[in-house]
Amino acid sequence: MSSEVESRADFSLIRYAQVWEDADILIEGLDIQPGDTCLSISSAGDNALAMLCRDPARVIALDLNPAQLACLALRVSAYRCLDHQSLLKLMGSRPSQRRRELYTKCRKSLTPEARQFWDAHLDQVDQGIGSAGKFERYFALFRQRILSLVHNRHRIDQLISGGDRAERERFYNETWDNWRWRAIFKIFFSRFVMGRMGRDPSFFQYVEGSVAEHILKHTRYALTELNPAENPYLQWILTGTHISALPMALRQENFDVIRDRIDKIEWHLLSVEDYLDKHQDQRIHRYNLSDIFEYMSEENYQHLLRRLIAASTPGSRLAYWNMLAPRRRPDSMADQLDALTELSERLYAQDKAFFYMAYVVEEVK
Image (cartoon, one colour):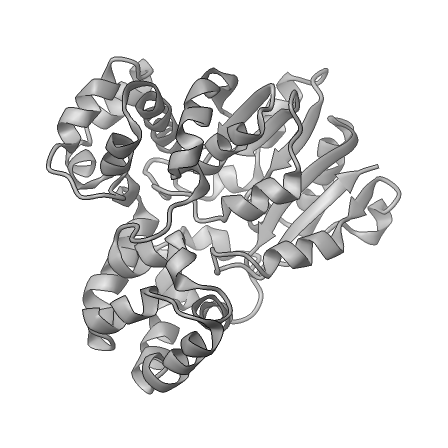
């Protein structure tokens, strides 16, 4: 059975050159144990790699888009062939004029498909592979053409410096949150603009409510309740690089751990549904499902939930995000799946990737 979104979206380009979902709350929610078999939506690969920090037996990364798997393949090669600082330079987290040279070091260990892809996109390597996606170009346009109409670099630096809770609240209310900020934000992050310039329009088919109003509300939370000095996602959006914070997979303390376990990750050009069809005897203990349920009807969501449960063991966990399409375990499946509501809400309150309406963790009975 193929995924519903497979017939509606274009999967010929890099949509996400980074994973815009907070790996810290993902890993805590999944509570991966040594020896677990994990299944992860690949996207650019950051969170699938972060799962290696908990020493699973396998991480199986899936994606419908070969360009996304090329992103993961290059990261895997970078962990094998580069040191930590060179990885950050290749990503674009640190400045460099030597990215093509770094790519050459990685190239020999790439899969043929990934080598062919990146050889044809060397201009994107030069810019840093973390900026190579459609979503990242959307943020770059916002940063370079829109945000500059509202706030100068000094104010952006002030915001990113953080400070205590009271300082962040005061700066947001008195300096940052002016009428230009609200007006431009609501246009640029509307369903229409984001669907055409950021995400695929088909990804909004099941979205309810105002996209911009939701994101503006949670942006305020990220700029005040959470500390911008500790938020790598916010820093990239505002500056195009990482200033004082890195996502989990890129942190120095995790580099050697991930490199030592890099052979435990594998990737396949398959939907979750097709993978389950091909491996019906396999049991999965932890699922990173990203926000794939956003792209399917309620009926198909429930059907896939049942298939995931059938492929699991008691205690297996599922983690996924809702942006604006509400998806949670239905009451009719309460005898099969526990909604870990308290854990989900506690972790959601810490979510540094602030686009989402909810973070959901559920456990198989």
